[in-house]
Length: 308
Ligand SMILES: Cc1cc2nc3c(=O)[nH]c(=O)nc-3n(C[C@H](O)[C@H](O)[C@H](O)COP(=O)(O)OP(=O)(O)OC[C@H]3O[C@@H](n4cnc5c(N)ncnc54)[C@H](O)[C@@H]3O)c2cc1C
Image 1 (cartoon, rainbow, N blue to C red):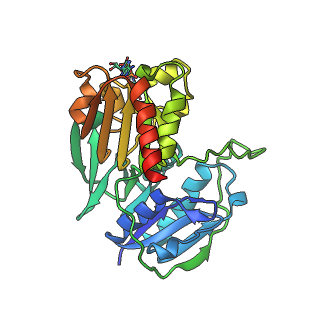
Image 2: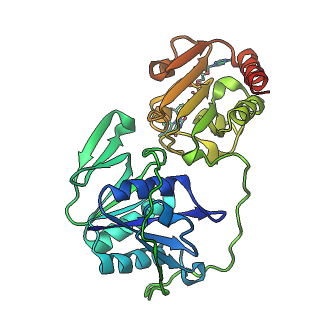
Image 3: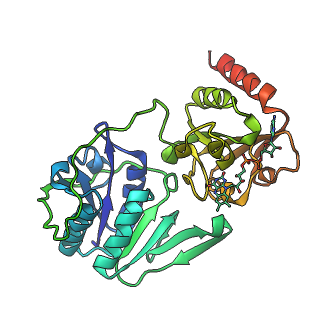
């Protein structure tokens, strides 16, 4: 069976949900060969036939060294397909790896169909392309595009050695873990509650309250992040994070094309806006016309009461 090389992420000793999605997709196209840093965790439970692990200390440069590692694994297994998650770092790795392999790269894909036809929404999701790649296809997948399914793989462990990086220009002096939130990661969350200009300067407290009763992540429009009401890392959209949750709740967001580009693949969209002509209502499965300041606290109280 053809190998499919999959770069996975492990957080707190467990494979991340987007990595489980990659493995589920990989199994449809061949035998998954996982590449992981320090540990492949439960990758074998999601179908990994080979679990190739590189110690973090062997990665002198986060991106360039990983490209070297993946290129070496690809040289051994000759995959037609390499999968990774659509993060900024992985997109850089994907581009460099595709050049190294003489293949092609497709980013922000939502599916890989039979015959390695890669499905990619473009122009803010207005058009969906079916793309094929000559040579090895290096594909970054949007989190939330595939339903993860467990399936046992052989899980043969392989310990990789430090790549022979020849163009070392960066030396990592220190690693500092970023602050962790108790909320799910925005890109991979099943539920996202986003606030826009309409929630007002102090409105993110209620956005967070609704996110918390729904067990979701907090997002924002660019108007809100540019105003400094919430950090830019929470921005959803063309120049922010792309999300594909089961449920997306938009509070006081008008629905500019640049915002829609980052959330329109959400399965269910709920919009709360006082302007019934707001363009985001066109995408809404459920819409409420009204003032977020009175509606959101009432919704939070109702959900909390029903769960009590
Ligand atoms: C190159 C480029 C890239 C961009 N990238 C992004 C991006 O990644 N993400 C992004 O979001 N934007 C992006 N933008 C900006 C985008 O064009 C919009 O300006 C932005 O999305 C608007 O944010 P908003 O909907 O919160 O604000 P507005 O468009 O001002 O909408 C506010 C909404 O709140 C409603 N409202 C007001 N008060 C209330 C209330 N009390 N109760 C209920 N509703 C209320 C209003 O009716 C209105 O619909 C980009 C723009 C450019 C040019």
